[in-house]
Length: 183
Image (cartoon, rainbow, N blue to C red):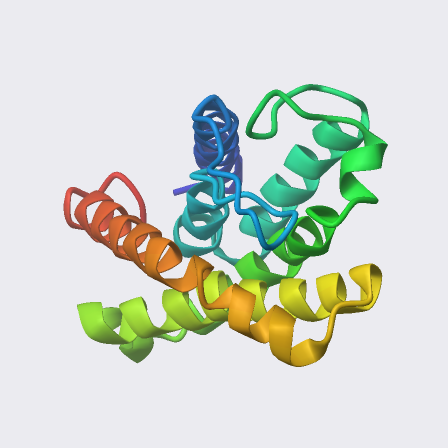
């Protein structure tokens, strides 16, 4: 496969993941009474970006997505957009959408870690759910002046839903790999 064909293939895959992430934003978030961040489906797009596109293309796709948000496009869950969203409590998590796909994609490039479904699931869970929730929670704790114990306890609310999204991401990526749609 020549370089131009490979770049076109990566660009097409990145465009599809970007479009899916935007579409996931049409599903309304579930608000929580104790913390100012909603439960959304959109972070499934971030997980797919890291898992399918790899470290560079996955991170680039999420930077593009957040750039569109910063420009004011209402593509976040609930029709939100604009720089003020990135500078809000939700922005603490959105910042991690740049870092998590890079780490996830980098780890999954190690072939033996991607060979078994359970090792892939663990990597996607640790980077796409635990890392994002933990670091987003720490930033939120600092931003909102919440106690660390309260914030970490509140973050546990997100893990069951994020675990379901991790399972979906791994199933989708493995099926696409098996059908030779992706590498």
